Amino acid sequence: MTDLETIEKQHLNTYKNAVKEIIYNNTKSLVEGDIISLIKKPPLDSMDTIKMKLLSLAKKENQILNTKELEILISDYRENLSNSLMDLTKMRIDELINIIDKFEPKRETETISIQEKDIELLNKNIKKEIKKILDFTQENYLFSRLDKLFVNSISQKSQKNIINNFEKYMKSTYIKQLLENIAIKILVKDRTLMNGIFEQGERYLFTKSNSHLFDKEFQNATN
Image: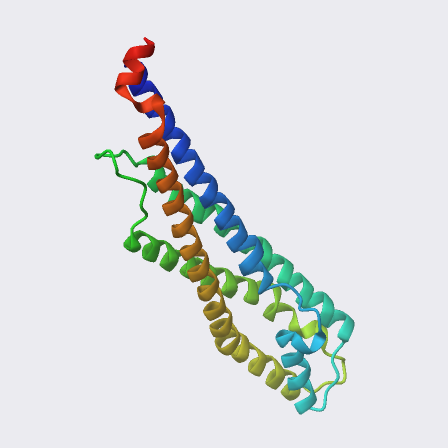
């Protein structure tokens, strides 16, 4: 391998690593910032749709819930859901970096490009995984523990009505709205990612075109 070929290979590896860093930061921001922010406890109780829905359903049945247990229940649910969703970081990073690792330019001006079909397939799998996580977390950290919210005097009928209506809401309206909001967050981050990769490609080509290190005549003169 000539000195020029070595320099070109080093430049390509530096370029790939820079793109990988963009992917890492973009994904971390998406999952830990954008998506998890939709799960966290809102600053005001009135904005807490889960809590307000349960209280509203109890009120319709003329029942009072154990507010201390309610806080614990929702807090545990959010914590476990957030922890599970963090796994999406590795899933997205691994898939995208796999594309970068396979990149070998066939032309002098070829740069890294993530195809639309690859993003669409990745997002489809991510959304499927999110839905699976939501279903599992709701069943195991929310629905299975609802009985702790009720006082002993509540009738079985009222308890059943509250639980059934709450589960129906969480499995339909809540999940639908959450998935729609997550989809928007993903769309925005995908655009940011594409722009970042494009700009990095421009820098790669600019350096390759303008640096004396890649000039064969300059290399020959210095050898």
